[in-house]
Image (cartoon, rainbow, N blue to C red; front, side, top):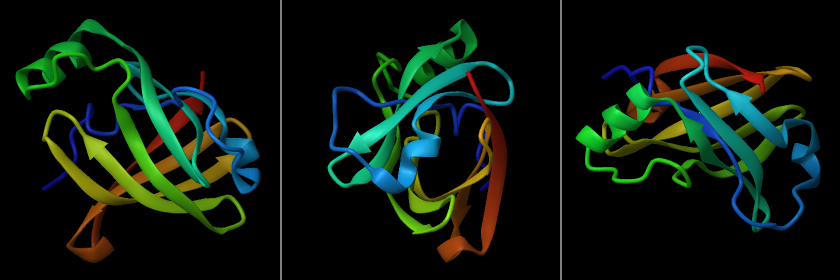
Amino acid sequence: AALSATALMALAPIGAGAAVPSATGVIGTWVNPKGSVKVQTGGCGDKLCGWVVWANPQATSDAHEAGIDKLIGVALLQDYRAVGPGRWQGRVYVPDMGKTYYSTIRQLDPNSLKISGCILGGWICKSQTWQRG
């Protein structure tokens, strides 16, 4: 099953989590390719996480139809750990599908992240490039 456009909606941290030294270049606000979601990334314990900080009406409606009453604050990026320079592995929550998938993040440059969500142990993946926003 492919991940929908709203599946990889946003990256954003809530609160002042612990510092994630290996993730300093990826900390910030990121916008999905359609510009429908913004996520703030930050530390969650010793891991990297991301929370929705803004969503357009369509993304909000899609999430609501899937049973998410309030999209703002939802942790889309969960428990990513550094696996190499500019690379992380964790889980991505897809609100409009109500599921969590294995995921990787790769920093392409200071202002671009490639976020992939995968099934079947990473054999089938869909990726999006998010821009710093």
